[in-house]
Image 1 (cartoon, helix red, strand yellow):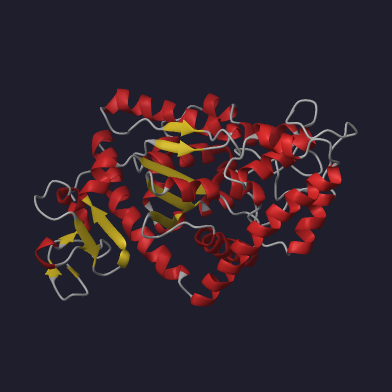
Image 2 (cartoon, one colour):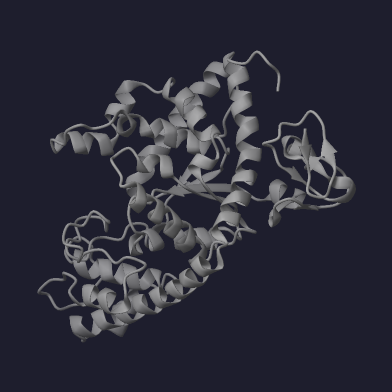
Amino acid sequence: MVKCRCGQVYSGVPEHLPVIGSGENRYPAKVIQQLLNKPGGTAHSGVPFGDAFLFTRRRYQSMKRMLSGIKPTGQLHLGNYIGALSKFVSYQDEYEMIAFIANLHCITVPQDPVELQKNLQDCVALYLACGLDPKKSTIFLQTDVKEHAQLGYILCCHTYMGELNRMTQFKDKQAHGEKNLSGGLYTYPSLMAADILIYDPDYVPVGEDQKQHVELTRDIAIRMNNRYGKLFKIPEPLVPKVGARIMSLTDPSKKMSKSDETNKGCIYLLDDLKTARKKIMGAKTDSLGIIKFDPENQPGVANLMQILSSLSDNRPMADIEAEFAGKGYGDFKRAVADKVCEELEMIQGRYNEIIASGMIEDVLYEGAAKARSLAAPKLETVQHAIGMEIISK
């Protein structure tokens, strides 16, 4: 039995399932799919969860679904923003956007509990500060939707060891002689596949270096569909043409990363502006003295151009080359630094407002409720197909 805040009681409905709707269109979330076929009315506002809990027939019937997650094992940086967060903002008006914080994936390597919780809170706040709107996007913590882990184990049982052996993260750490690697680090690609497949997304935005995970996800989905019947939609990777991979400022052959040992090659979204400017002015370039987009021969300059282009509505590289023709690297770096600092100042201002407002828990609560209404029926369908269920829920 579950009681809506408006006072209506629904019998035979598990208490963990939310109730949505108002007036005569009030329904348990378990039967949310029936809303899509119900004649009359296009909007159903979430009575217990507020304005963010909106379900419209038009939205679900016409919009493609997109899903992505981010693993906040450290502070979010400019590469995360350009490669993922800024894209989410533009995508949320075009797609039904699901954006989650992958906190289960954080613990494949040891974490300090206090630091991890701070990173998770900062990640949510920065999601919102960068422009993700809870009314348009579903934002939640992975662990708040238990179905992820359960489906993850099921998919792990349908993933071959040879496939896991080929995944780059575990293979690279093993090749570098790292000791005491966890079983979670080895099997996390199966959980990542569950993170995706449980929502039947059409697209998964990824960087070029993450396409391998989506390809494995597709292989697992096809394998299970062939074995048990149509269970999962086969998702497509979506790799942005510009800004998908921002490189280290000190070593442009490597991706910008929070694991940067010098801390000079990575600009964090919460860096103070003076520090961010200093990092850009000290970025590695070359001795050619020409501002030209040539990633092979001038990787450092090309990386700075990529940053400037991405923060300027994907400004054409030819325009940037023309603006700085005959100018030195100092002028060019100052222009990049100005643009980066302008963006950081805006993000940090919003971040501080969000932290002060105390809205994070409400956003996560609402997002998890929306996500569970999609994940729970999918998990039940999979388990029935496999033959794991006895009790009909």
